[in-house]
Image (cartoon, rainbow, N blue to C red):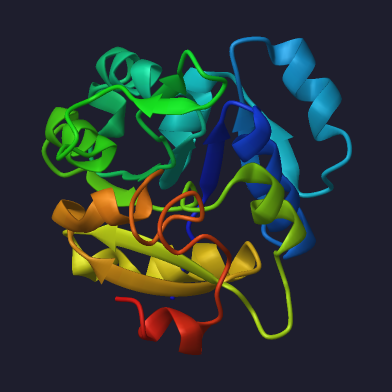
Length: 213
């Protein structure tokens, strides 16, 4: 299988965690963000990272990971709509915001998912995968490359891309497990039954995960 080129857009907590894990796993990748200087400074610790503009990253990569807030994913898709054709987009977003009690609340309908909403916005020939946002950033970093490996769930309608998605997850230090199509992405978003901040409540091994799906 040909190794696909990866671009991480945005270096917040999730973006940094994914980049650090891929670097540890020996996978090369592109990083980009609005502030190129900050991206360059952050990326110095990752041997396999190339710093590009967002436009260059989207153009050059096969797998694009917009590690940005849910409410900005739509803007990103609109801005780079034409360049996203034929790409695999890994949606890490969770549709949440701080509530009045110091916690978080869902900002879309209770039965809706970020995965379904973002998938509908993509151009024809682009494939959305819900993945990498199924754990909090702390666990995404600390639990990578555990022995036995912990599971990262993913969801996508396009099963032909499963090998590329699963290789990405393995290179990030986890065991991939598909839960179904994008209509199942609500399960692996915050408050979903398979999210760390949902009913499952923790990271799990493959054997444990198989009892949950």
